[in-house]
Image (cartoon, rainbow, N blue to C red; front, side):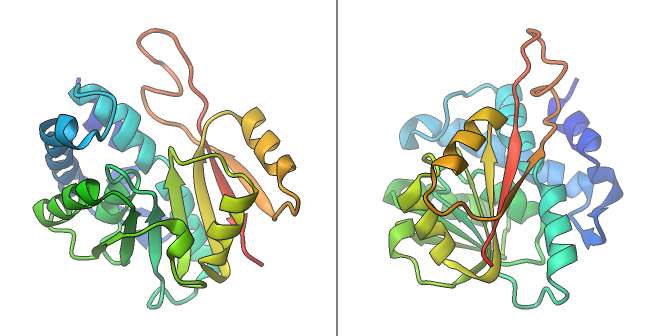
Length: 234
C-alpha cells in the first residue's frame, strides 16, 4: 500500500479544492511530495532535518501530518479574506520545510515565506523549492524575533517551541491586524495548559486533525492526538 497516495485521498485531495479554494491536483501534488521525500532522505544526515529516513514514516508523520491542516487553512482563507490577492503566508521556524513545503506545493496561487534561522537548512529549503518548482516560495534566513511587524496574513508553525509569553507576543506582532496564527500541536490538555499560562490569553480555537495512519488505525495500535490551534489577532 502506498501510504502517501492513500492518505491524500483520505484527506480529500481528489476533490481538488477545500471550501472553494483550489488546491494542486492530486497526481501533481503526490509527485511533488515524492520528490520532497527523496530530498529529505538524501540530505537528512547532512542537514540534521528529521528523525527518520524511512519513506512511509516520512509520508505519514511529516507529509500527511503537514497537509492534514490544509482544509482548515482553506476554510480560514475562504471565510475571512474576500480577496486573496494580498495574502502573504509564512511558515515560522520552517526547519526541513514542514509544514511550509507541503502547504505551498498544495496552494501554488498563494505566496509563502519559509523563515528559518539556520543557514544550512535554508540551503536545503532553496534546493527543495527549485526541485519542486515552487515559484510561490521565498526562503528567508531570519529569526522570528527580527521579522517585520504586521507583515503576514497567516502564519503556521509545527514542531516549534512551546507557545509561551515571549514567543506568543513575537508571533502576534508579525501578523497583520486581523491575521491568524495556526499552530500544529499535539494533546488538547497540553494546549490548554499553554494557553492558560499566557498573561493575556488571545482568542483561539482548537480543531482536531485526522492524520491518516497516524491518529487512527496505526500499525502498532497507538493513537496519537493532533490538533490545529487557531489564534486570531484582533
